[in-house]
Image (cartoon, rainbow, N blue to C red; front, side, top):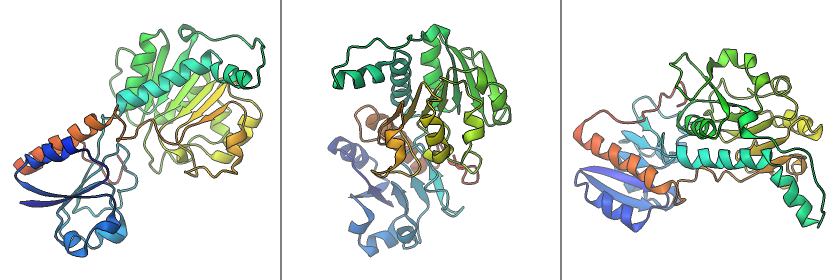
Length: 313
């Protein structure tokens, strides 16, 4: 029987479901500080985010399963420890966050809401139709793909960027590699960043690249805040380069109260909420991924969503 530590919020239904897996002994904790050292010493499986100072006390650790799709906080684990994530679980919820924000900005709704706050009756510029838009996702995992499928269904002309050459799905007008991004980015009315954090993605959107975007384009980031050079974004936003910028992730994160990004025109910030596993939209999907992997592990079957620690996803 494998000893499993679960760190994070799980509901009673999940505890009951896990209890049916007779190959495991589960213990649940809110955080690492609650865990006795003797429990750490015997744990073979960790469900949650590993922390170096505590996993150093887990000599028997074989496998770490993340609640998140992003794996950058755990790629430091040694090769002897299997690492899996919850890839695919967050696609629908985050894609709808992106879609809702795209439509809102195309219709100038955030600006009208600001005017309402000050009781200002003023007709602004022209709304933009989805059917007149070219939409690009930099990142073609489950989230980027789900977003572009929705935008395609609404009538947008959609494009994708991914790290390697891949077969183009039917809902895309074009598919590009990362090296080719600058050949398409200037044509697009909407650019969504949906890629994980890797050495290649850090700082990918600096001033030079953002100025290759159309003036008046929309930029959305739900991947990792490090993909955008924040100071460069502040500079362009203050020039009103963008029709709108939506950030569910920032660098630094959390964004300090006095950071200038808060007050930049046409920048809309949410506190990393589009993909919370504890929300009703995502919880059951995430826990289903984890449950399946627990079944696979007990049977010695191939695991789903194994992270390549060198690539970072």
